Image 1 (cartoon, rainbow, N blue to C red):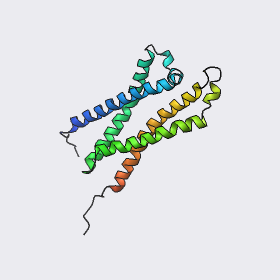
Image 2: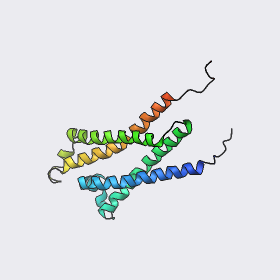
Image 3: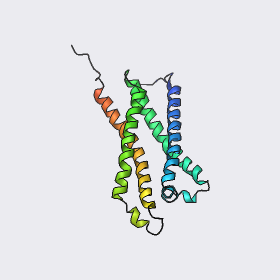
Image 4: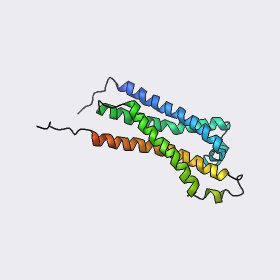
Length: 173
């Protein structure tokens, strides 16, 4: 069986590119905020101390690269869902994902700072100023929350859509 290319395929590719770039821009801005919370997270945790770029530019570049695949994922899954359902709404789809992101952004930094699962406070004694380890953990939790929120939002919403989708087959009598 040979598939014919769709006339809308170039628009779909452009949509995925636009979604990736939009999320990349969000990632660059997000990293600017989190770099203010914990420069150590980027300098030591992400290895930007060795970067030849100015700190804020290196942070923005890191955030841009981190956001690109998330935007492509959200847009790509959204396009698949839109093709399968006449009732698909981009606004509702993105709102549900943003709700999952917001929940994860609220929860993950608290958990990371409270539990310190990797012993960051102990490992940083004498190397960082007081409080830097907690800010590092909060920043790490924010980043984990951003990724986790997007993935959970896409996965849970996609599962819900599959469960609600009418099954193909002969119509019921």
